[in-house]
Image 1 (cartoon, rainbow, N blue to C red):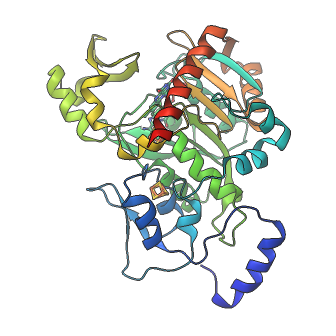
Image 2: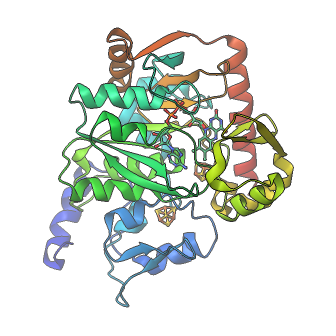
Image 3: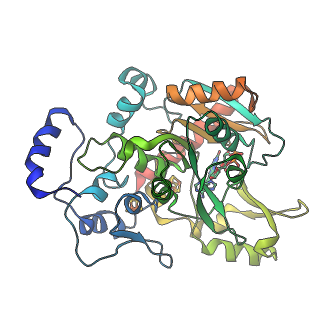
Length: 367
Ligand SMILES: Cc1cc2nc3c(=O)[nH]c(=O)nc-3n(C[C@H](O)[C@H](O)[C@H](O)COP(=O)(O)OP(=O)(O)OC[C@H]3O[C@@H](n4cnc5c(N)ncnc54)[C@H](O)[C@@H]3O)c2cc1C
Ligand code: SF4
Ligand code: SF4
C-alpha cells in the first residue's frame, strides 16, 4: 500500500493537518483483538471493502485475514467504526463546526430539513414511502451519481449487494432485509466497475465506516473521493441469518412465499403473497440480534447525507432528514422534478424518533 521509505514524509505531512489519530503501526491482528474477538464487530464490511487481504467469510460472517502475512499498514484499524469514532471531529468536517454545535447531543443529529416523504413513481414499491429508491433515482438520472450500491436479496431473502446503474436495477433494492450483511463491500464492487461517483445506501454502522474512510486524511489511496452520496437508514438492530429459519417455522411459510418483512412497534410482521400479515413478538427474536448491535448508539444515521426511516411518519411514508447541503439539494431537486412528494413531520413524530434514539444510546453506552 505505501512504501516504508515514504512513511516519515507522510507522517510529517499528516501532522500538519490531521487531528484524527493514525494507526500506521497496527495490522489486522489489532483489529481482530480489539473488535472481532471482543464481539463488537457490526459486520459493516468497511475493512474488507478497502483491503484485499481481508475477507468476510460466508459461513461465519466475520472478517478474517486471507493471507498468513499481516501487513502493518493500519488501514483496517483506521477505517473500522468500532476501533475509535471521533464523532465531533467527523461531524465538524462534514456539516461544519457551527451546525454540529447546534445539534450537539440531540439524537436526531444535524439536519437542514426534515419531511415525511412518499414516492411519486407508481412503479417504486418501497418498504415505507419508497423515498430511498426515489432519491437515488433522481441522483442517478441527474448525473450526481453514476451508480448506487444497494442491498437487494435472493429468493430466500439473503441480502446481496448490487451496483445499480439504472432505474430498473435501482428498484431491485427496494424493501428492508432484516439480516446482517457487510453491504459496505459493495463500494469495492462499484470501484472495480469503474464508477466515479458512487452513491451508497446502508445502515448507520456502514455509514460510520464510510465516513471514516472519507474524512480520515490518511496516506491510503483507496479512491475515497469517488464516494459521493451516503444515504443512511434508521436502525435499532439487525439480526443473524438464523432468524429467518426460526420465523418461517413459526409462521409456517416458505421464504419464497414472503412478500415483505416489517418491524412495527413491538412486532415483526411477515406478509405473504396475498398481503396477509403474521406477527411475531420482538421479545421472541431478541436472541438473534447481531452481537455488534449491542454497543451501537446511532439510531438515525447521524453521519449520512440523507437519513431515512419509517418511524415518525404515517404508514406508507418515509421520514427523511436531509443532513448535509448536498443531501438537502437532492431532496429539494427530487421534489421539484416530481420524484417525491413531501409533507411536514408532526412534533409528535419527532418525539417518537427521539425517544427511540435515546433508548438506543442508553443501551449502547451500558455495554
Ligand atoms: C436492518 C434494518 C433495520 C431498520 N430499523 C429501523 C428502525 O428501527 N426504525 C425505522 O424507522 N426504520 C428502520 N429501518 C429503515 C426502514 O426499514 C426503511 O428502510 C426506511 O424507512 C426506508 O424506506 P423506503 O421505502 O424509503 O426505502 P426503499 O425505497 O424501500 O429502499 C430501501 C433501501 O434499503 C436498502 N436496504 C435494505 N435492506 C438493507 C440492509 N439489510 N442493509 C443495508 N441496506 C439495506 C436497499 O438497498 C434499498 O435501497 C431499518 C432498516 C434496516 C435495513
Ligand atoms: S466493524 Fe466493520 S470495519 Fe470493523 S471489523 Fe467489523 S466489518 Fe470490519
Ligand atoms: S444496530 Fe448499529 S451495528 Fe447493528 S446493524 Fe444497526 S447500525 Fe449496524
